[in-house]
Amino acid sequence: MSRNLTKQELETYRTDGAAVVRHAVDESWIGRLNKVVDRQLATPSKWANDANPGASANRQFSDRYMWRHDAVIGSYIRESGCARLAAQAMESRSARFYFDHLLVKEPGTANPTPWHQDIPYWPFLGKQICSIWLALTPCDIATSSLEFVRGSHLDDKYYMAEVFAGDDDANASWITQTEGEICPDIEANRGAYDIIGYDMQPGDALIFSAWTLHGARGNGASNTRRAALSTRWLGDDAIWDPRPGADPTVQAEDVSILPGQRPLDDVVFPELYRA
Ligand SMILES: O=C(O)CCC(=O)C(=O)O
Image 1 (cartoon, rainbow, N blue to C red):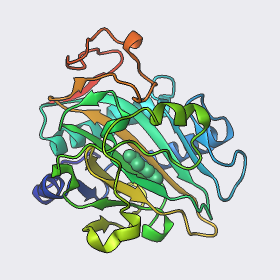
Image 2: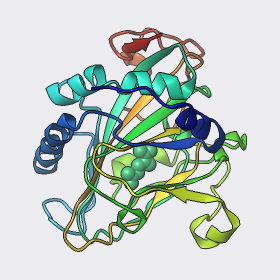
Image 3: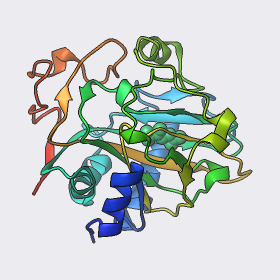
Image 4: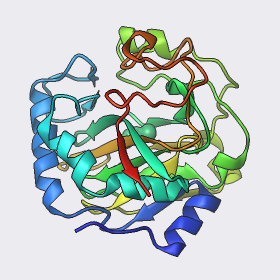
């Protein structure tokens, strides 16, 4: 099974910068991807950030850039229909894949995900860049479902990247090199912002622009994990923009393109959908 975005979902993405997509992918992916979660928690890759290694509670964990060696994630990005959903949301003829990002908060994880935009973390510029955050476990706002500042993708702001709790020194050292305005303290002034968020079931997804401000609370559940897989997508207007502070998973020496060029490097940024 794979689906298209509805007119309503497209309109919501356009105006809010984020849309919830129920039953975004076939449920058969959920069990397979949750096995990847278990495996990465047990054997993290070199790109993992782990606030409490080995713990089964109060552990914020992320791992990323697994698609090139993990068969399940490799199949998910090619076969689940998510590339088409990304292209439709971005109103782009094509969708190239950038990277996958597993985001886990074990029960009782206090760490919030700080409010941030994604664009300053990545070596790209362009308006047609988005993520699909696929829920692998049920969650609501109190158990760390993502929240968004509605319409913030249209604000023409570029905020300095935030260091997440649990980021190790190596990770913090590249993140703190980013430039931009300091992100306002949205959490302390929630009433001043139009904040939206959704209860999620496994297989539901949030599709959001790389320019939309988003964050999440800790996982307040005492016995359930919150796990999600974010996949990152590049549309027609994305250009390669390597700069200090950009995620080091893909660097200038890994690509044949030059700054300002489109990411036409098929091995590194495969085109997984074309209308
Ligand atoms: O899942 C989270 O806590 C953060 C996710 C996020 O910021 C993203 O996918 O861009």
